[in-house]
Length: 199
Image (cartoon, rainbow, N blue to C red; front, side, top):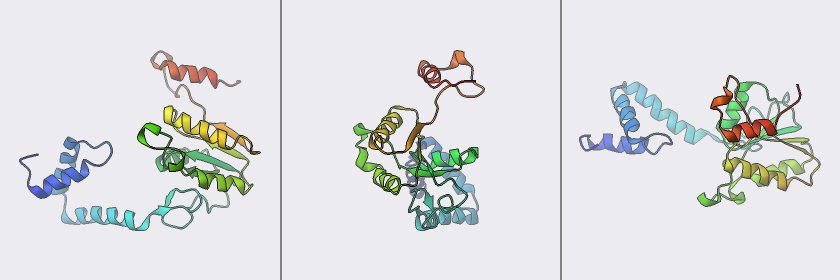
């Protein structure tokens, strides 16, 4: 990075702060930006500023939106009796793209990770409790990630709502479609057997 001019070094340093972007990728992106037209660079800069200025969290589900209430929560065609709980907005987007879920969502904006200083108070559980207390929800689908943090978060939510009159379910985990059993890890096979279903 020594051979770069100071403004390029600064750009590389800023790009390298993005998750999944190392110094080499940041340098490639910076060089791409250098070659781009001034108009394209301005559009990129404007879109970054616009996202920070216009995007807020939905008052109900906490998904990023331009409005006070997002398009999912404001859609009367959605099943108002089901909430799918996800860790992050990108998980919500993945479920939406599948086109199979037609209920509502709740975005926690994280998962339990005590070693990283993320406890129950850092998750948006108070808002979830408020939604459940309003009495319209019949099923809570826990779609947290199938890892240690996601499992701990699902367990915590199950404990919080165990005495309520709602059905609590967990997304199934197991062998992916098109997968080959000989390449699947032991934990995934274990979960596949645990969550087996009738034919």
